[in-house]
Length: 276
Image (cartoon, rainbow, N blue to C red; front, top):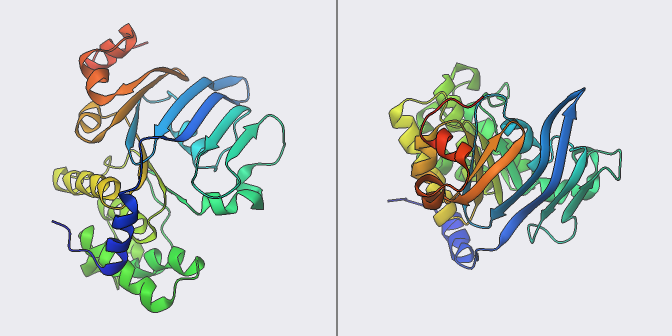
């Protein structure tokens, strides 16, 4: 299905060696904003080479957790361990230092193996193509190779015809595809997506979900997707974690999560019932 250039095929060969071990292990993470405790005693495991979907309603703490996993937001307590992503810099222990990992150069190699795409992605004031090549050139990729990889990514996301246009001209759905194109071009080990299909029509949603599974299966990426959409979780998830009122209520393989939930709150949420 995928017409991929040589640089993608090379990564595919290495991706075949990915084993089902925990790439991220979260233990005892807490986060407060003022008097409000947003996350409480979060324990979470993210399998290498998998798609983990974090489900929850508005205000559950999903985006905050995603920002902590992506080293954009410090937790107040707890640890987040990244196993084998880069040599060294593998565990972040919160509560022992006042310095955020986003400002600590020790964690820069780790952060360079991550890409976070939010519901309203950051768009640079330049062409669509430049928005994709920018991250590659920061990593020392030549301009010619950066443009080749970026154009291939834009073709796969269906917006290559917009490559020379100013990025501000993109619709919300096209901007979401641009975020995915950045991921395809950069090929990080870890991809974090916040409500990725919120602004997409059904065709765009199907395209994004197919690309997400392509990145897992062919490129060896590990993805964490935050969403409220139970049906999207059923379609793409390998593992599902249910976050409610700042706590992980349950984490399980997709089929177990939906057909045999252990917790009554999980069962009610999956059935579309209102939780308070």
